Length: 249
Image (cartoon, rainbow, N blue to C red; front, side, top):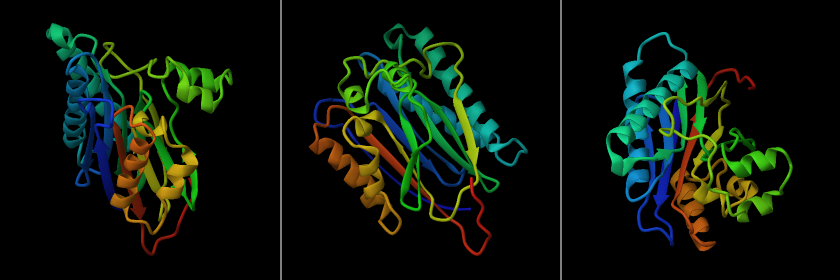
């Protein structure tokens, strides 16, 4: 499997600290981002712990026969345990947590794990598809069709999560696995992007033939132009596959 990736993160125009973290680990086939939450510097600590613990967990399973999905499940469990333990032992970090969205490429497959309201998209042949469900109060309202997408962006409780890493002793991630096609583009982002940029606009800026770093930088710049109310992080991964038969998801 040949994967190309790029990322961009920015503190935005309203925040003083960037609580987002991302990791690109092509040697492990792992790409992730985390958006931390908590008072003082706790959110920053939580997202950093999530990234580091996930990388360690995936590394320990390298070369084994564990499926990509189960590797990610293990990584999420390790990250959750690390954050929860730190929060319990250090009062100043109490209540910290983080989102996590992670992609793992292995054995010709792409696995995805997700907790929180950071998102993952697939752009295939120019069409964008959301691969994750927001674990948030507003996400629940949208799924019940009680509010519109436009109303969701302005909802006073849009940052309230219903699931996050590190808040409880155990957490259950959403997991998925698929067979990629050559040219597939995976976009992972924090809500700093999706609060300001629509899905169709993401697809327009992340498309085949466009430089990946240019796509990431352009999306972050667009979110800042529209208010930059939060930290914004974008990770784009492109799958390249040569001279092999293609199969659909």
